[in-house]
Length: 221
Image 1 (cartoon, rainbow, N blue to C red):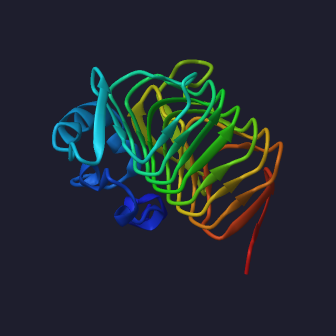
Image 2: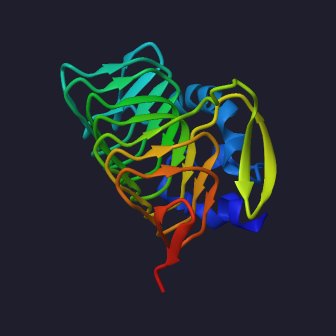
Image 3: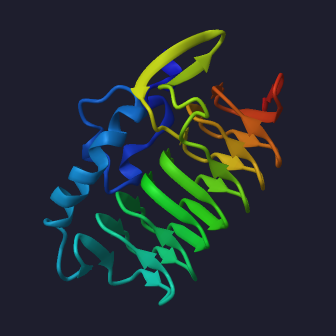
């Protein structure tokens, strides 16, 4: 399943968390490692560039964090990032350089690469969002199946096991998700793809695609 590999989805130069991907083939393998990695990385961050503002919470001095935002550790907020009014970071979160976490957006066990935008009423849990990916207002990742069984990924009629009960979405670099879309557990969206607003997405969406609805996915080329 070459399309699902880390190197097919992400430019690891565009995240402070590049080392956590070492030894992994598929991105969801990183999810159980995020918490410990933040603790390890946070202890090494430059005190000239980052403040430790609470237990296991590191915020870049150049970041903008609203007084009404709540950040629970472990968490790292990168340089020039913006965490807006009433954002709720539940923990195990890396917010990349220049990223935006917006009004009433909730994060949990995630890596946001540099320049990611989740700016309006988003829920992002157990997910990895690639460089310059963007989730429109109200779009969310659903990270637990309704029957509580382990998440599997559907790709070309086959199913790939993740051995995870909680897994949201893996968005490749430069992915655009339309407003009020739901990315179901185990969704993988390839680089440079667009998801129409109000979509319900499941399984793998090829790189360079426009997802209009289930069964109607066209190539940008």
